Image (cartoon, rainbow, N blue to C red; front, side, top):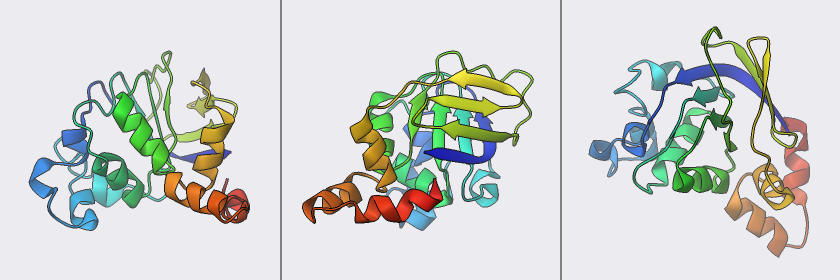
Length: 174
């Protein structure tokens, strides 16, 4: 599975309260998403494009277990998150939503222009950006299949119906 898009760069300790601000948790997903990361980057929600990738420092997604943090990113069109380290619950929630969230302990964004084209080979665990290459954690086959199906719920529905219809539909999008 290959993903490519513009890279957004964030530092360390981006918590779930920044991704899904508490003041908007009772609003619609669209309204919540409109405030995603606004405390760090007021322009983020309005400028993010479908297919963009987040690159970040340590502890991306730490904090509460709110699934809406990953939902807001997915709703805005973020296709993947690669960070030096990830909050465990955030990572699992993102994977369950079909958004690859991968740790890359050696990720160093120094000298890489923001919005540089990033290419992520999820299956091989390789991130290429700014003329440099980094190795991400690798995911087991069952998680790769779940992501290819669009997340946990579509994956379970595909398995329940006894086929890979959803996976086959998404092959052209990789």
